Length: 332
Image (cartoon, rainbow, N blue to C red):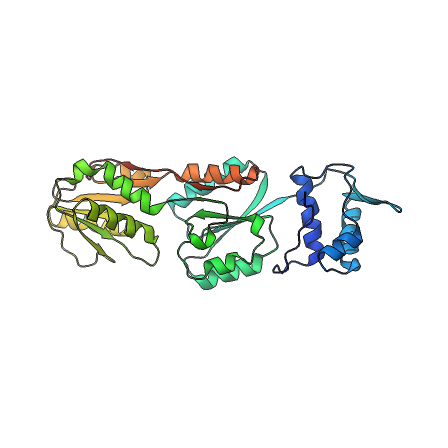
């Protein structure tokens, strides 16, 4: 069992990494009262540190009453009862109703086991990198929502690998990190497949896809479904100044575009669910009642928050695909 770990890429001073390693080992029940710690010389040699660096860490732990020294024998765990505060760095892309459900579920499941600080990068790689850099070494766990930012993986890899969890969107560069994520290709393909009987009365499927914020898997899964099932289809980046045509189904990840399509349908005296179809992405309570109900393809964000919290509590390092489903309503 490895007690102490040192990451040379971290900005956190080496003596603090030693302290954090021992405190974490106690908090996770890997170290118990009476257990002997590696000698100062052993730690210094293993990590190419000076003896003074190791002694500084051990002296600090002695002052806190966590360890004690036996003359000529070494250092031992004195107490498992100390104030070790789990501090969690939570980096979201933006805050909306879906993320609020996720966050609230996560906090509820953590049940005061940790201090959670939330940050937002708003799809800016510069803000993303700045927040990672400024907070590197200050937290016991890092939960990152990287979205599709170019260069995000390189920044994430500067963090302590064993303390990072990926949320919502992952990719091949982050495949070795534990995660709770959506499989966007599969989710949209399966969702459309479930609704295929209702889709048969329409002539064309149109995905409104502003690629800047949206996961590329949505477009890929949509295209695969249309090709495999012989549907005419198109992908457009915006809905501005567009006229609706009877027989179209709009697949809409962005709620602002959803409002635009509903308003345009009213302006053209179209009946949603008859003249045109709508499938929105991500369910909200409002979508149950708007325009006789909006059909959605949605993951369970509350379940995502619960799963993430349980992974952290139990030191679970899996990659988990969060479930998604088609919720059929009057718009299709």
